[in-house]
Image 1 (cartoon, rainbow, N blue to C red):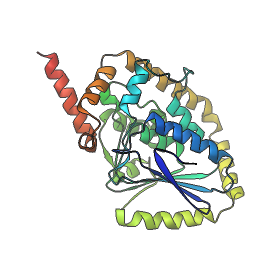
Image 2: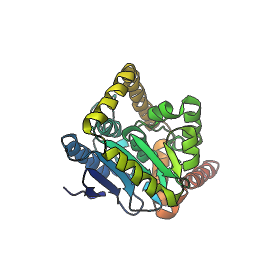
Image 3: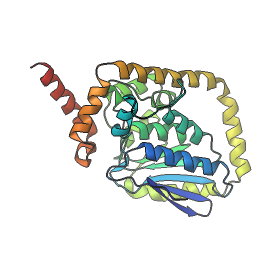
Image 4: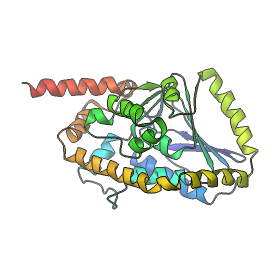
Length: 286
C-alpha cells in the first residue's frame, strides 16, 4: 500500500511513517484520508508493534491544516462531517488513539495547528528536538483548535498552561513543550535518534499481551472521562461554527491564501499572521 503524503518503511515489527507532502508538509485533506486508510490497515495488522512518525523535511514536521482545503469546507464547496458533534480531524485522531500499536512522534522542526492536534491526540509518546517549534495559531485567526487540540492540550498541560499556549498563538520550543507536559522529552538534535532507537528496541521486546495489559489499566483509569471528553470535542465543533459565523475566520483564511502558504511565510507563521492582521487593521482604518 502506497500513499501520496507520506512514505512507509517497515523493519520487522517497527513501521516508520515519514511525512513527505511538499513544500511544507501541510495537513491536506488528502493526508487526512491517507492517515485514515493507514490506520484502518493497522487495526488488523499483527506484525506491526510500534509506529514511528517523522518527517522528510527538516524544517516542518506538519505545518498545519491546508487552509485552501479548510476554506472550501467552511464555504460549503466540499462536504464536511455529517455528524454535528465530531469533525473529520477529531475522528481521525480518535481512530489512531484506539490502535493497539504503540505510536511515537519524533518531532523535528515546526508542528502547528491540525498537525499538533493529531500528534497530541493520537500518539502514545511524543519526543521533540529542543529547537522544534510547536504552535496553535487558530486564536489569531478568529477560531480555536477544533480537531481535538483544545481538549487534548488541556488534558496534557492543564487549563492554565493550555490557555497560554492556545490564546498566545506563538511558537513554543521543544524545551517549553516538555516543561508544560505536552511532549515526553525535548532532546538535542544529535541525541534524539539514539534515544529513540534504544526506546523502540525496548518496546519491541515487549509482547503484545504485555502492551495490552498496560493499556487495559489505563482504559479503566480514564473510563470516567469518556463522556466529558466527547462533550469537549462537541464544544470544539460548536466553537468552529461560531468562528465560521464570526467576522475574522473566513477573511483571515482568504488573506493567508492571498499571501500564500509558502515556505518563507510558514517558517515564522505567527509573524506572518501578525503582518496579515496589521494589514487588515490598516485597511479597516482607511
